[in-house]
Image 1 (cartoon, rainbow, N blue to C red):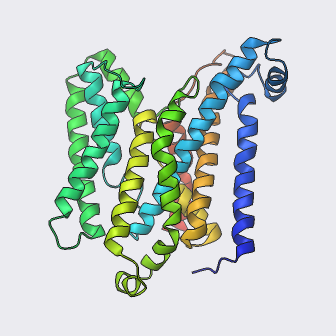
Image 2: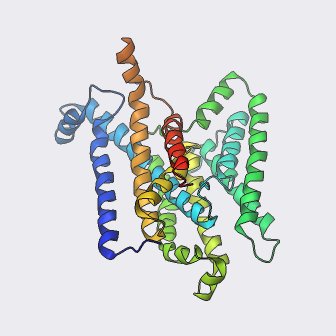
Length: 348
């Protein structure tokens, strides 16, 4: 394992934080409405009353959307790094335990049954998605707790099996849905960062931020865990408790962002692999850098999703400004080639 000196640790984090800060500074000036660029956004910030429309677009639409992308990207990439460490498997993702499938099934049932109940302003679809995701995680733990010690293999197999079951149920729900419901289902499954204002950001923060703190704090123990269960126990690490708390907090955070944005793939798979290639497998630096890189990656992918159709419109002499691709499509298009390159280099 690569030695991480204090200087290297803080310099790496500083560089990652600087890039993320630059993304947030650019956020108000980048979006599907290309007539409002960085200069116009800066002027709107200085004089909101002079151009209220530009101010609203830049700081009530674009900035909250980018902040949501950063929060979701941090969560998925960090949880992906944690799951890859826990399962000692570079193919593990935040959705390995069936969180995405359970959340999607809950959302699809809410769409199909037409639930319109909200709690504290949170939509019925988001509530159903969160409950569905956590139900699957609970079932996984119930299945594996029968053994004296639940192992990562048992968790992995249970999660994959329940994920397949949920996928079958989703196909059944879609089959019996009408055209409007089917469109809404497909749209939700693509993943989206559509938001107006900061409400979605604030509702998920009580689950995501504590998870970030706990998972990053567990990095030192997870370094010992990577050396093997028995050696980690001799060094004072409670393996079962470590697995339990890491999985619970990672699952809660992942379920929270899935409930808001739907399943967004490849962030939790690709980003930790890229960071591990750059920094090594030391969890003390892998986890925070994966989080920062995940926020940057998803924010940039969201910019591409907003601008892609505008670029197509310029090429075809059509006005396609305002047409936004689902961000889940962009992360897949960007993530698959990166993953194949990593696979070719035998990183996974």
